[in-house]
Image (cartoon, rainbow, N blue to C red; front, top):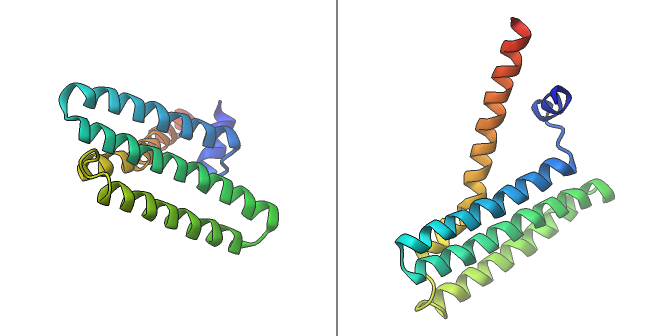
Length: 140
C-alpha cells in the first residue's frame, strides 16, 4: 500500500490507476444521472448522458494517446490524437445543440462534460489527504 502511495506522489501512474479513474468516472456519471432523474427534466438528463459519454470517451482516448506517445517516442502522435478528439467533440456537441435541441439541454451537456473534471479534483484531494497522512505517520 505505501509503495503505491509513493508512486502516486512521485507521479508514476500505472494502468491500474488509469483504469480506476475511468471506472470512477463511469460510476459517478451513472449516480449523477440517477439523481438527476428524480429532480430534473428529461432534456437535462439526456444532455447529461451525452456530455458524460463524450467526456468519458475523451478520457479513454487521452489514455490511449499517452500509451502511443510512449510506444512511438513522438509527441506528434499525441497532438494528432488530440486534434481528432477535439474535432469529434466539436462535431457531437454541435449536432446535439443544433439538431437535437428539443431533446438535449445545454445545461445538461455542460454537467455531463464536467464529470471527469470533478473526479480529477476529487482524486487530487484524495492524493493530498493520503500524502498528508503518510507523511504524518512517518513523522510520529
